[in-house]
Amino acid sequence: MSRRRLVEIEPGSVFAVPLFLADEPITKRFVPTTFAGRSSEFGFSRVIVDLGGAGFLVEVFDLVGELATDLAAVTAAPRLFDPVALSGLGIYKRRWPLLGVSPEYDAERDSRLSEVRLVLGADDDLRLWHGGSGVGAPISATAAAEHEPWTIWNEARLEARTRAALTHR
Image (cartoon, rainbow, N blue to C red; front, side, top):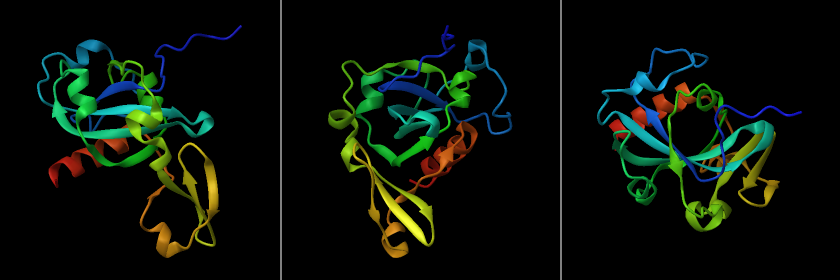
């Protein structure tokens, strides 16, 4: 018998990214009251696809708001940076509150999955992962530098990256 997850994560799920939890451990479990009274202190992300054991492919939006921010406003915002792989642990621990799921979400139409590129491998064997079609041909280190490396980010590290990107935009 399989256990039901405490938080369901499906493609199109939109999460609030708290920008104020820098000192909280990634393993800490959160309750909804943790976020009460916070105003425009959230970034936003959406799950593009479940990568199985490699986490989730997510996009982070160039928008700061509050938990009551309209889902349509979030998904209409541009990306803050290229999509990345996310561990999901912080979502399961309720570190990132679920805002909702994009209605009738389609990874290609809504997130341009086929355009996502991530670099896998070591310096002597780099490969370019193409969203929607998997691992592609070898790629040079010079060409690889133009793409996001395949790193599985935990939520705390991605919060820090989001804060830094929002500060420098």
